[in-house]
Length: 264
Image 1 (cartoon, rainbow, N blue to C red):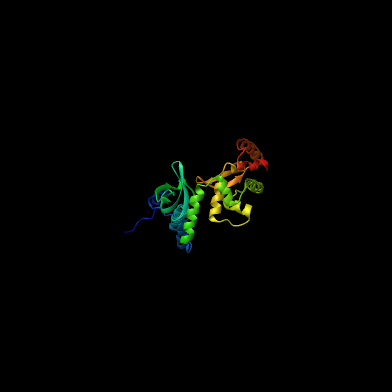
Image 2 (image 1 turned 90 degrees about the vertical axis):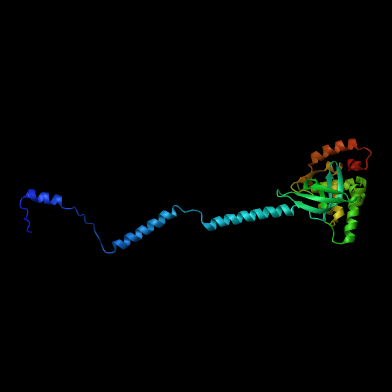
């Protein structure tokens, strides 16, 4: 069918408005591939802004937590005294010497010990009530002698301890004079023996020195340093503190053998 060609301007205008509008965009070669690449890049950038902790990161944290827990458990175990150790311990208001028969480790990090004394009595003792410990020798004969010496020393008076150690009150003061030179260092019983006698101390010498340094006379010169409630070392007092403590001590111990420090 033949259509008439619009002749008037009005007809041309009506025809134009009735046709669909077609918008033409530039379409250079390769533009579709470029758009795909840009879309992929934008997708990666968007995903990166919403990243979550990786699995390896989570595993690392889990591993560190497990290692930390294992380390804490090892510390809790190693802080307890070994089964078979000879110990001095408190039971109510009394002090005893015995041998650890078994160890019970607590989840909180502490320990309880089953201890048998020289009279074959058993005690269930918490770690905090053990005041001193020493390892048991492998030799049966040496172990028996050490335990016998320990039981005897535990009840010995100060004069006997001084004789056993061959340490007089003036030697205690001389040790203080050396120790006070280093204000940052605490003196252990072993170091005390080395300082006085210039040899490596035996297990019994360390125990005797530990008891000597807790005597009233030694408190004139040293104060006790504790770890977990146990006396482990001794800190030299200042000269001013020693002068004041010695004055009080000498007025109270005029005729005692310990009063030798009053004339040094």
